[in-house]
Each structure stands twice: as structure tokens, then as C-alpha cells.
Length: 154
Image (cartoon, rainbow, N blue to C red; front, top):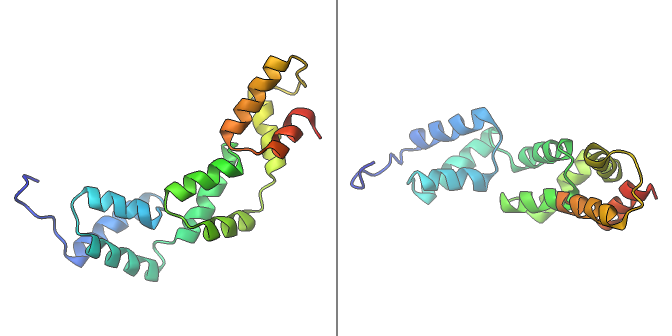
């Protein structure tokens, strides 16, 4: 665009762009909005287009959050980090909690897997190395109970 051109705000054009994004992967409403705003589309047209796709079942924040939680859990990230990332993607706290319950993830086992993957199975007696493990698991988004379990098996 050369600055004089206005992007096509026809509903069919916006729907085409949205469907192209959603064909690759799920997106939250906020992610889709940000992408189209960056391309210069009008906010009102974007909102209307996303609403129509949500009615058709193409876009769903519920489905997006459940898939995202599974994806991040498979990468050994903890609940705090996953919640924070979902908030950044525009997912409400209520929906995040609902999706976490639906996924039924064992965060204790996940913390243990993350610790074993990075540091092995040995319970470290050196306080500096143990502190390193704690920092690593904290950074991954696990809370203190999960970290205790992963490091000491308690």
C-alpha cells in the first residue's frame, strides 16, 4: 500500500483473510484483530468478520485455549506461564480456568518431567545446583508445590 490506498473493508475480503489465517491454526479473537489492524483494516469490520466466523464455528476462543494449554503442557510449561501467555492473547481468566479444568493436566508430573529432561533424576545435594533447578522450574511457570515435588519427590 502506498499510503493513499485504503484496504478493502468488504466483508467478503475480511472473511477471506480471516479464514486464510484460521486454516493454518487456531487464533484467539485478539490475535486475529491485531493481525488485521496491522494490515490497516477497520476495527468495526474486523470485529464483525470475527463474530461471523465465530457463529459459524471457525473461530473459538474456547477451542484455542484448550489447544494452547495442551501444546504448552507438552512442552513442559507450568500453569502460571500458560495462564500468563493466554492472558496476553486476550483470553479471559474465567475461560482460562475452565480450559485448565477441561484439560485435566497433572502439573506435578509435568514439573517432574521438565526437571528430569533438563537435569536428570539425581536429587542434587549442592545448594547452588538445586537453586538452579528451582529457578529453571519457576521460569517454566511452576509454583512452589510443583517444584518441591519435582526436586525432592515430596
